[in-house]
Length: 145
Image 1 (cartoon, rainbow, N blue to C red):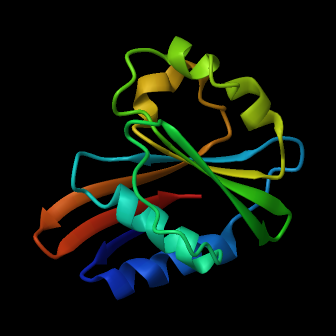
Image 2 (tube, rainbow, N blue to C red):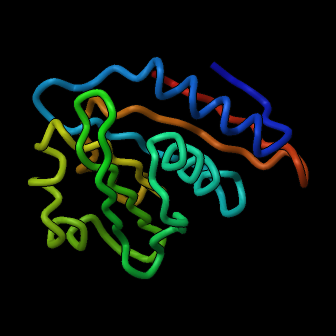
């Protein structure tokens, strides 16, 4: 499903629709890869998801800490984990952050920015959302659920 968002409100509606249609993995974490260049809307989409899940903290991209974990209560999820891989060099770095444990917990909803950096260890059933900068106020969002 390809959508053009022309505002933050539209991105929030897209995020809400995504959450409502989200199928939960029963035996492992639900992993969503957020693909796109800098400024394409990945973090804004994540902020919208966090807001909809009731997270009161201001969610920023964890570029320097790589991972942030937020407690939630949504469907069967208990944690929203936001991962930003912009600064990592290889998937080995993520393995040192308990990657296998994180992705094996079905109570985790994981949003990953720059997932292409760990393509070889991304779960095969992960969801993909592609973001594209169209103009100053427009982003193309392509959701593959």
